[in-house]
Image (cartoon, rainbow, N blue to C red; front, side):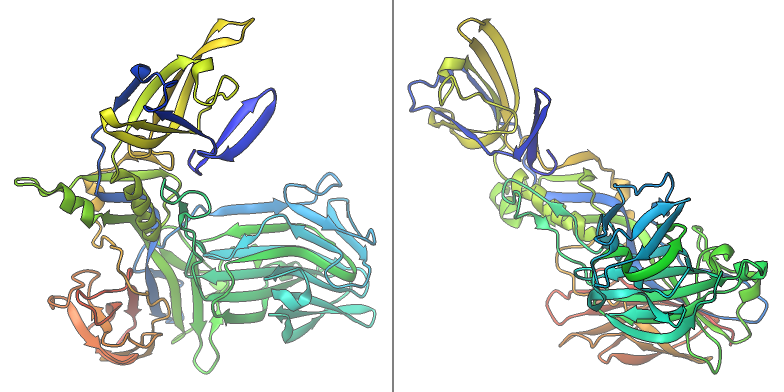
Length: 608
């Protein structure tokens, strides 16, 4: 019932239909309606001030700045990173000589793709882009940190293909957001990154007998690239609250790890980065094709997609360009790892050198929650000695409220129903007196419309239960006892758990009037006495950027932890200690002032 739809299992058949797809009418003016068998009650279920609690969500946009001393391999992060369940989205080892149909869709007009001896074998293709494919069955959400391993590939002859491609449209090279282009080069092949349909970066020539581990890493500051969708009686299917796309910048890293079976040391060698760059406003979802073969001759040993700690690590050695430090384990060619306890650890061969600057980007964690009120309902209920507020604190169990934005949409959907009159009841009659006739059976999930002016009742409700008493099998006569309630009395859209006031200790309770966050704010210069900050966005007209020493007191009249308010995108703030933390939000010129929903945290740990 959570999705505003109902099902019926009968005679081995499962039938689905929208909630309320059929309406039965009980009208006092209809002489066939036996209203003496109608029982109604109007429970006091009015709510006009709802606080909803959701899951643990990504909160502040945190950037930690460290400086290597040539010895330290561990760095403590300023905040505990937001962590989703870390693990495999899928893992395929190509066992048993068949494809797993729950993972892959194969298109193979030339019969070039097979599974032999635990490996994906591709021998040939019809020469056309996008026709010989092994494609993942689902769209891939490009949120948080995702690592796609396209296996260890061994080439047996010159190959023409795109391996490990993410596509923002039909699977063709022109739509390839990121992937590995394999091109014929004499009797061998070459490997090059393909980004947004175009080849870029270094070209790696393959060697006979060598294996090539191809990996794509995607980093997004937004773990969820779409809002959750919530329904109510006022917002049924196809018009729910929420569901919008979440815009995010993507950092994409394509890496190649060359393995020489005759040299065991290559197993722990660092990977070669073929591409490391940013895609602005990257797509929320992509198709994934392990192989798009025009004429391929190779074997792929496995494929996997995993989620890691949603953090990005980059460093800059003096005199060199910044690079992404690959996080994972040594066998995957990684250089560092981030623990769930909030510590950055570099493996011994990759300890930052003296004066190497390190930036770690991630989101902090906190409880998702939102409070929404219906001012008109409060005003209508206000009496002498009664402020009109009917409040509740609830935890959303289903559908999942993953963020504060989701909680706001869910709370608004709850108010759609809870500010109307609650009605529940029962109606009992013989089947041949049922409105619509004896051949129209009432079923749970259908709508019943009740009009009883003498009881001041005029409402629609959902049938919750139908009890049937058989009176005469031969004449097919029975008695119905139908229980019903509208959404104000018993919601069809949510499953709640009891909320607790102690869940409201979070320093910020988001409202419904926030302005954009500043995920791209960063420090551009650090000295012993000053820090230069680029907010990443021009301040709003009539507003500015507010900087504080702690994440609280966001108010134009509070100066107790204020560093300053700035009207330019780039500005300088004082640095008073080795370890310094700055909290930023932008604000506009409205009254009352609106702030960003979440702060951006810039943390500096540099020696003077």
